[in-house]
Length: 249
Ligand code: PGA
Image 1 (cartoon, rainbow, N blue to C red):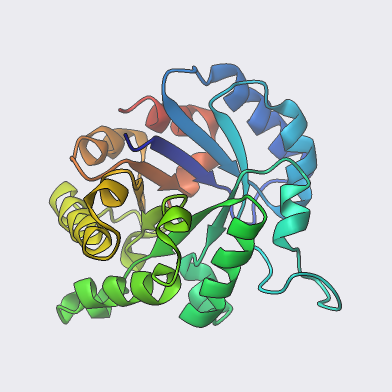
Image 2: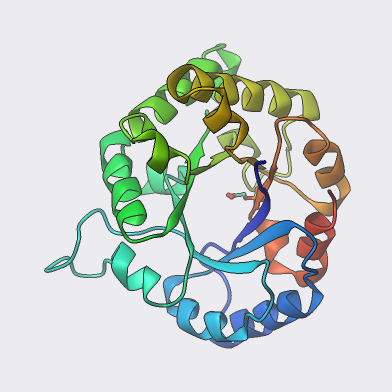
């Protein structure tokens, strides 16, 4: 059975002290009831936030990792370093990384492999920009991102991946994909995974929706058969909103 997951992506927000406070509040409120909750914090928060986590279903994640193992890469943070803080997850290929930092499919594929080699679970992001949806190529765009980013993995490694479908036009805009738009893309992704790795692997793959998910729309999105949770940006910065989404299943 695939897992239900709600991951908060704090992006470049919160001082260390603010982050610790938020993590403590979430930790207090999380119930160990089958939903996995992940806090994807800035790098500098990881070690301290790790110390605040006492719940079995609350996990820590990073928002990115280096594409190299170690060495002279000023400013970079390796998968191994992230793992050493106690993190279990890492977001890879967020649209902000793809667009602002020009991360392409080949680079993201390297990051996925380094994450897996260091026992981090990649939350692999995919999604089309508005113009691609308007010109009707959104299924092809997402299909290509998944194929190039993930499809040289062994079935065993692929089985560890979490996918996040995040239509770029919905991220931080307040415009959410409709429940039907989310479901049809998630279903297409699951069918693509099934073609490559078989139905058992596909059925066990958690596919999260991201893009202006909030307490008021989470229940409708999560009610879809192929939507297994969410990757939450803005609404993850406030414990009440974030917990409103966590409890929306
Ligand atoms: P948002 O961001 O919830 O603020 O739209 C989602 C994301 O970027 O992961």
